[in-house]
Length: 207
Length: 196
Image (cartoon, rainbow over all chains, first blue to last red; front, side, top):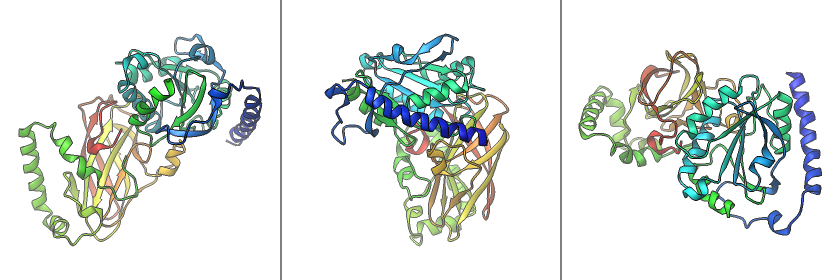
């Protein structure tokens, strides 16, 4: 437990320095990093636009998945959670599925949904695939499930600037980040957001 | 979404919408059952109906399972995506003058059943230790997604939409009550109008 905490703290500081580094290094086209007028979104507006993170994990078929390359330019929902979660994680995925049904098909077909496990010890590709099929079965776009070593999934969380999970992945960030075609996230969905919030915001973010 | 601690009139407001999907014959039968149950707990019903109750518990009668001054309603389990773990949600209305507490639960469909009513921990994404649900006098308390649930862990079988699960609830003062909980579809609307 103590080791885990230390790891989290160290990673936390990595996340912080990564934050500083990438906000300095990130391209700054005035338009994409510009703040949006308050009240634009129904989701939780981020104080700082977050660039789409770069990490490579393993998809449910066992193949490498380069998140930045595979999702670049597409409206993308990124969530970190675990399948043995009774409440928040399945609710987030169910709400995502409901929200996607509530937007025009032309938009829905473009959206990518990526679920990264915080519990790689239990969430193998097979477990993730079977869990995700419960939510996307009737949607044209399949949810992507990613796993890796603990270090890899923690690095992915740090790259996305969410709180790195602890307690075997059970204490994790409950933020679902929405990146736009400009590869920035300005809004996130938390426990308490409704599917209507997401279906309201998707067309705005997708432009 | 309903709140764990705040008074919430939503279940009563949205009830007709839910009932409108139920076949009339079933509704009539249900009404008969409810009236029958009501007859057994005349004291509690009279209290609620006579205007002596203050606060949200007096807003409207609810259809549910009654034990003492408590009525358990809008209970449901969402069909789990995991083969191992599921969550039950419900509302409890306390028509009495004394606070009560849902301290534990038992369900034959799971190896362990625990009440988790710590909404702050849950919203932080934590799986907190079991915490009882306080049901203040003359109030409605609810377990709703991301704010509280009854965790059914190590499921003994598969739960599918359309199934009904018996859930034993143990209240500190009102005692134990068995509630039939429907399993709803994974993206189906929740009873009582909760978003999910």
